[in-house]
Length: 513
Ligand code: GLU
Image (cartoon, rainbow, N blue to C red; front, side, top):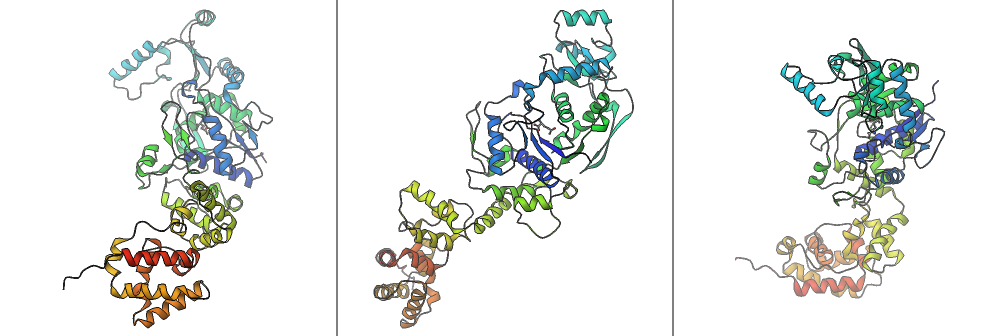
């Protein structure tokens, strides 16, 4: 059996898109499950699109996400170098090989000549105005020029490209592991440039040569590369590498949250969610983007979420650790249909993972915020706060942001509740409660429950009537975690202060009658 070797092959043209993280993840899961090798290759042959810092960003993102690399940039390995800009000699050699075997040719056409060709075809009513078997014999290339002239042009340093000579007829077939049979007529392909005039290979040549040299067994990549796959198959054939051709699996697109079209950075910006794994500042525009990491998504939650964007286990289980994903993942269960990018689902996964964290970790989240705010808190109090809040938060920062009232008296109060619930009964209840709470032996949930019940009963009212206004007086808000526990944590002195504040500041609404 062929050794399983997969690669993630991003181009360092900017921040890694979240879809790229999913591609890397699926490659990684497949490699780990099959006992194979996961390779990171940087495809940086397009000098015009190179963005400084992008490569480091890719590496850091994968590391944060827990996607391990066995071989490649930053790690090394038997097929080094893994950065395409350092592999130029290979591409040249293989392009020459295609020329010698008659599968490629030199083309000297200028931009103006190419434009004239396209114009000619347009006038003749041809839909695709391309350099192909249909037009190549009318152009200036080594197929139409005498051999000596071609030789001369090359010797004299005239600019040229190397183009693939696509056969005039026939079809190309490939079996995609996700999409099934893909058949394309040769007549639909153009004579793609393989080597550019600057001596750099195009994506197609470099990608195929490297997949071959690096012994890649499976090419798992985004659907946007499906149209290139037949050309890649043709390249394998032209080189005579058919026996070593990898299997292809083109992953479904990530769609906008409403399912209408491909997810773009613009959509994410507009809807206020991240699209990059980590913070990113565009070096050209200075534009800053918040990453999933900085927005408070845990890597394991993001991974779980991404795993489900295109794949499902076929069971009800939704929470999968990386280990479980490695065991359960299969290419057969990847769908063809685009996957809706539902950020709420990502947040839901985050909530689930926060709940699963040990108290110490949650305390750490809370303490990070407290340190920033310069607020001291005992370890016991911190542990109680995270316990009472863990079911309610979505992000680590929420422990402080939603639980500020554990440390500071509220300054804003839910006015709708005040105008509805603050009446003479409530005021009497608060007064009696202040008196009662001053003298209890203990100040814990049990004592609070009993005291509140007794005080209410003594006034002939139901405790339920005054609970909401009590919560507003203590926290400012009409909803929150368990109120008795909240009061216990806030403590006797501060609770009495807040009740006193309510008594002197809440206004009883004058009734019309
Ligand atoms: N360099 C391509 C990219 O940026 C790689 C496509 C492939 O995996 O073949 O996505």
